Length: 275
Image (cartoon, rainbow, N blue to C red; front, side):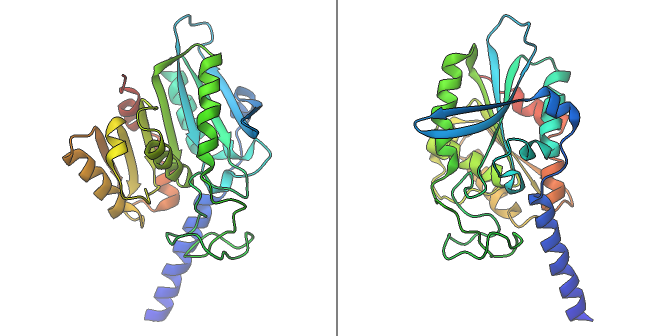
């Protein structure tokens, strides 16, 4: 009986992670609201979706960027919009009349936001087939271990230069693999963002000093593997005087935590941060 119970638990854990990585169907409202765009910066093609909220406003706009989970990777410039987080954030921004550009870039299938193949915490090595499910310590083979977010900074700098955006209101959010990308961006670009919200993704580095420059709102399910690590990181930042908040999502595992992170209360806290 113990073996059967263990098998059921492991199978449930695997399915939970797979579900979190899988794309959801994209609501028609979101497809209609977000225009498909591409740009090439420093020889790198960037595919992204863009929407402008309150286009009639005359003041400088905020810039909001969301990084999707592993299931949204690809080249269709569409499937990454299927995460419930996209609609949650979009509805919040519209409901609060926040004048902003909301960007949702797409990471290619053979890359990842932070350069580490999804599905485990071990350093990237000889991976298993990219067609296998993403769970345990199985690894996808990536074309390049360079964090894909490094291509985003030149793109974002160009976008900011070409649009009426306030540099005091630049917000980065991400879930799962996207949250790992948020940590990577903050580590490599201290002070670039006004505030950040990584949901259910762990920071794999050790140096926390870059994070003191950016207010962070971190959410993680209490039943996630990354819970203790994320809480430890935020506790250390708070003890060092940083503006860092850890929000535990009680009883939630990975999929539910990713899909329930971007609540009005949590987004209120994030968008209250200004420079």
